[in-house]
Amino acid sequence: MTTSFPIHICSLEVARENDLTVYDGVITIENSFIEDPFRVQLEYPRQLILRFDDITFPIDDYEEPREIHIYKSLQFADENKNGSL
Image (cartoon, rainbow, N blue to C red; front, side, top):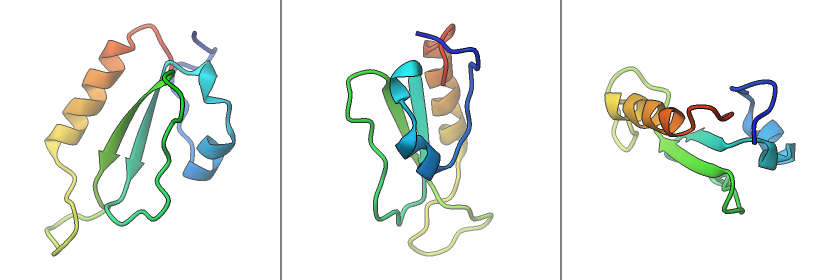
């Protein structure tokens, strides 16, 4: 199922309020200390969860953004070639 917008970027609050069944996939980016993570409770759409913190150099107990996060998101998007995210 696709919408007129193949990619929709929004805040966590907006994602919680949206009807996610209109999307083919959901990518959630969350920090390593999130207290109330967002999880799609349906089998569809699929969800990719990326966890890292908004830092530019190593800090104890924080997760640095890495190339693998980019690779995973591109792979997920590729698996949804004609779909919406």
